[in-house]
Image 1: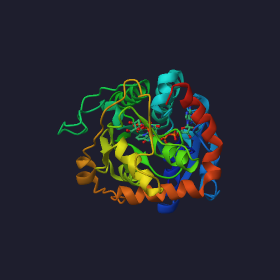
Image 2: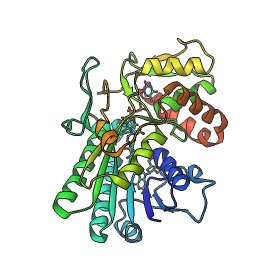
Image 3: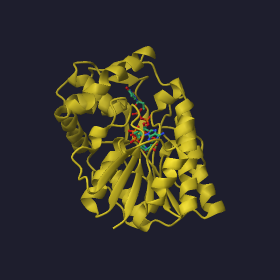
Length: 332
Ligand code: NAD
Ligand code: DAU
């Protein structure tokens, strides 16, 4: 039995990770989360109190982080400012949380000799042409496009330096676009599902030809657990489930699954600097650690996600109006 400190455990991927730990292991979890606009206490409701504790606080608070890390066996670092569009409107919290926050956690792990796993994104590699036969792999050069992805790239490089210079026992994973329950309604898939529930057309940036490589959040988290168990210290693992699809096709699938005509969407302003395509080659994770995705049928996973949002309006409704008001200001 180990004690995991999970930062950002009240967010989308982190809260699903805590559920995977509770269901699949006997580990105890302390969640450190600031409960920003993206963090929801409700995402941890119904979890056993003797296994999961929530500490509300900031990962840049060195004193608090030091005391929590001292008590942990493993730190799993999900906390981040995670939304590209927000980073284009105001990059400042991305610098604080993604860079200074990661630095603060690394320093605490160094001081207390605690194992660290760093959650990162495929966006650190920039983007690919639509017809490029290449996919991202562990040695692809970093080339981030947005304030969000550049701060994630910077945080990855801090981890590599702390491994090499200070011997911190760390691993890194870079995953593609996640979908599933408890994702904030600012993100592409939940935004369109909740728009349709509200009788509003889905909103497609530009022509909708940008490609994302979709993976179910539980598959991502199973890979993270596997890397913590068996990954080699100092290594990076790419996580992806061969789920490439363009945004227009995803919107059309959501419309069909929710009983609407496939062309009942609006084109809105494109995202400045919008990355064209992400694609992950996860051969290393699969061959070295034996991980394979469970949710291989995207349409079935999407249908289950739609069901979750239909059944859990109380979870997302409080965030919807403010999110759409923000998008209205940029014509998106
Ligand atoms: P999210 O925005 O849903 O959740 C982020 C969580 O971090 C929230 O609970 C928030 O309250 C917390 N947080 C933010 N700033 C904090 C601070 N200073 N101190 C403490 N807590 C703070 O994000 P997500 O989509 O769940 O992403 C989680 C991680 O996974 C991020 O590191 C992100 O870069 C990475 N990632 C996300 C995806 C994706 O598709 N969503 C894909 C690959 C990697
Ligand atoms: O690739 C991993 C990344 O995936 C993570 O690192 C990020 O934290 C996560 O937010 C996600 O980034 P994206 O920018 O790809 O996700 P987002 O949901 O914002 O958008 C997905 C695609 O859909 C992107 O091409 C923009 C487009 N889009 C988005 C919204 C919100 C639309 O066409 N319409 C929309 O309303």
